[in-house]
Amino acid sequence: MKNLNFIESAAHNRERQNKSLRNIMVLTLICAIPAAISRLFFWDHTREAMVRVKGMWVQTEVGWPASVFGYGSFFAIAFALFYIYIRFKHDLKQPSFGVTADGIFINQQMLRNAFVPWSNIQKAELLGPPESPFMRLTFKDYNALIKGQPFMLKSIAKANFKSIPVLSITKSETIGNIRKMYDIIHDKIIPVLHYGNMGPDVLDDIAFK
Image (tube, rainbow, N blue to C red; front, side):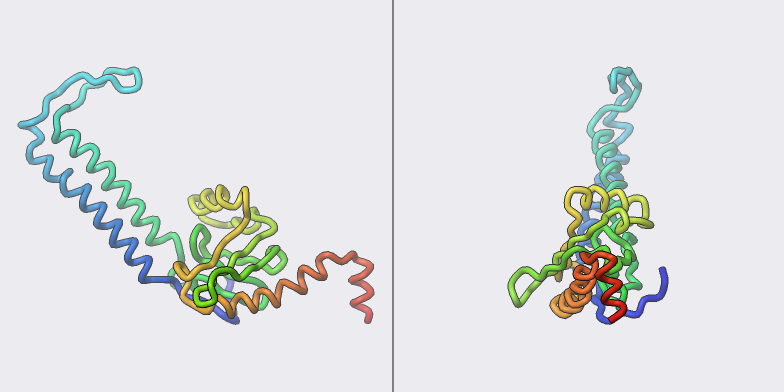
């Protein structure tokens, strides 16, 4: 990613992220601890049996310790992987959202270090109550938006943007002056939208005036 000179930027909501990570860690422990304890009773309370799985007979252990260990370890691993995903899906060294002279920078939700030029922003809206507004951005080409994203984030973003290429910038993800950033974005995209609707002949006339 090239170095960007931000006119205005907003930080990540680290408090919210840390709370989510703590909750996932608790869920991981809730699953992992019973799975580990069940191993103490494994051999006295399980037996080998033939079980039909997807049309095939397989030999496995049955009994409550086997069930607790199987489900507990499965969900513990799943939550641990989700923890890693949440922890590293964004670049915390960069702002959560920013505005530059050439476009906007998005490093939140399903996007990581994504730069969007003004030409790809169709509309910016400031919504919500005055004391807690949020910004809704509509993009022209979602394929250009998600280009270069990591595979998992790209897949999630594509599924979300395919029907409606819209992203909301809220205080839950963004610690900064959303109203001020909206004003800058609004002033920047209006000329782009205005001149973008003109034909080449009109633009040539403007250039020579």
